[in-house]
Length: 400
Image (cartoon, rainbow, N blue to C red):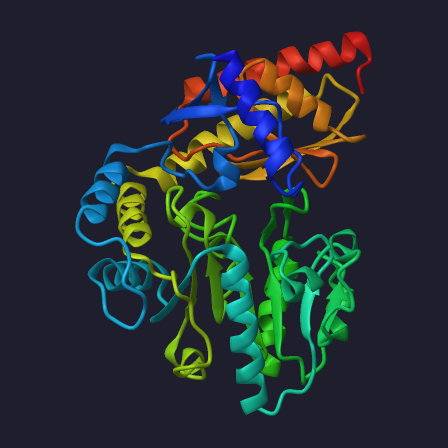
């Protein structure tokens, strides 16, 4: 199988856009919390497709739902009704308290749709000000969403669209700059790509208060944090705020491409036929997978498991990190954990992969751990054991 690995990686080098900096690993199978490469080696997947495979790889209920739907109807477009789409919309409104859903294919598309909604809603309300976002955020890589994010991601793609204002994250005083004519505030309660930065409760509550007082729409990006990742269905539930709109993707489809925007009717009604749409949004197979995944999360107690196992894992990693000066901080909520290093840490992620643990390096210096929500205490201990071996190697050989 080594020849197959070499062939696949050579094809990437020869045929693909150079969009990704991939790890030297070709995966061919996944079950539960494990994935397997072409050599048959097993890895504990603490990345879960970047917070996507919340119910684990190839969960039997999800696989069965995909098979059954694919045998009956794969795609019909949004010119017609389909059963899985409306069934999923109903489920999402039940668990969220919102009453309208727009389906798309990704987090980027969900945030783009949310931007169009707040702009049109703002115009109808006479709002002429900007959309506010925060330093360290990530809302996508389209021209509009990349404007709300790192300047590094904007290089070469200018000019950027107008109508946005950046404020520092977790800075209470900075919120005083938000004017009455602001259209919306976009915020992540836990910044994933930014380095697992957790919003301060007082900061997020003040945002909510400002939005109510000034009639500004509050958009919470739950693309990475939603669907149980933080131990609650949505991360904003930890912070006692009431968003007007939330955006979903990643963990929604159990690995199938799907995104969603949730809002209440008073806001959703600004979008009329022709204002926005998606050929593949709400695809029957993706919706069937999402229904099955959501049912597993609810029926198998995965919110509770994410909270309890996540707290256990976070405390174990914090305890371990005390022995190593190159770790600045360990932080997290539920099964969303960041280990903040004092230098760049991609090489650490490679070492962990070689030891059989998949993680990612985000914000250059943070190891992100976002395993499936089915993670057991024993598997959490396995993660800590591998971290310990890698940290000991770094300390002994002064690798960083």
